[in-house]
Amino acid sequence: MAIAPPIPADPRPHLADCRIDGSACAACGHVAARQHDRCERCLGSTTPKSFGPGGTVWSSTTVHLRIGDLAPPFVLAYVDIDGGPRVLARIVDAIEIPAGGAVRFVGDDNGDLLVEAVAS
Image 1 (tube, rainbow, N blue to C red):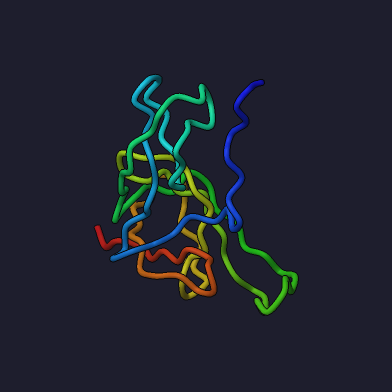
Image 2 (cartoon, rainbow, N blue to C red):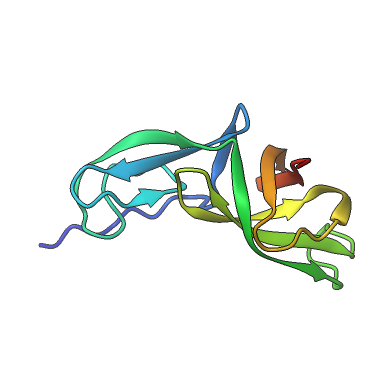
């Protein structure tokens, strides 16, 4: 019987002290923005690891439609976490940050990650 990768109850990353609680695989080196006992790729053993508190915007977009309780406009960005995986986050103040811009995690809003621009 094959071992299936874990399915978390809430797949969104967990933020603690402005760092993402995640895991790293001892076998293949894959990093995940969630803590798992087994690797999502090779099913090897993982160890807990935290990522951040900063990252680099990979891409961002302004959303002009209401989604749940989020009133438009708001900005979403894919962020490559320093030393970690890529995650989806909402940019505070609805200011679009171009690709390559530096950000830091500042908290969460009902489970959604929040980032802000880092002054250069």
